[in-house]
Amino acid sequence: MAEENKVLYGLSNVYYSLYDSTTTTFETPVALPGAVNVSISPEGEETKFYADNIIYYLAHSNNGYTGSIELAELSQDARVALFAQTVDSNGALYETSDVEPPVFALLFEVEGNEHEKRYAFYSCQATRPTVEHSTVESSKDPQTVSADFTVLPLSMTVGEATENVVKSSVENNTEGAAAYATWYTDVYIPGSTLGA
Image (tube, rainbow, N blue to C red):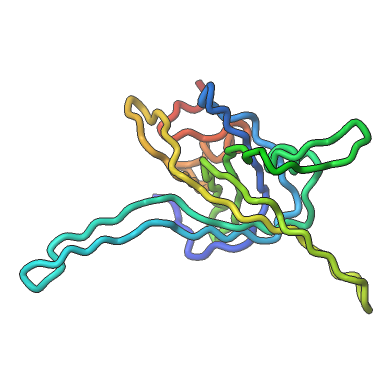
C-alpha cells in the first residue's frame, strides 16, 4: 500500500476547462497562473427525523460546493472565457448585463508530505471578479483579484451508469499515477479508461 499524506499544503497548477453542454465534453484545460488561494466549502443539508426519543433517521444532501479563488491577476483570455466578457475591435474589454457565465471545470494541485494531490471540480460557474486597487505607499504591495464560484453536480457517464458527479481527486502515487499524469491533458472522468 502506498504511503498516504498526513498533511497537505500549497497551491499551484490551477487550470480551467470550459464545458460544452451540447456535446457533454470538456475543452482542453487552460492554465490560470498566479494562484494565491482557493477556498471551497460544501453545500447541503443534514435532515434528522426523531422517533422513539432518538434520531431515528438521518439523511444528507450533496448540493455541491461554493468557493472563491484569489489570483495575482486574470488574463484577458480568462476574463473572456470564464466571465463571458468581450473584446471590441479597439482591444477594449467590456462586459454586458445579459450574458450568463459559462460552465467550466476547475483543476488544481496541492503538495503533500508524501505525494502531490490534484483536484477536479466539474460544474463551476463564477461570479464577476472584484475590482480593488489602492494607492502606492512606502512599498508596492500587489493587488489580487478574487472571484466566487458555485460547483454543482454534473450528470456524466461513469462506466455504464449515469451519476451526478461533483469532484474528483488523485494522488501522485502508484495507484493514481496514470490519472495524475494526464490530469491537465483532458479533464478526468471517473471510471474512464486511461491511455485508450
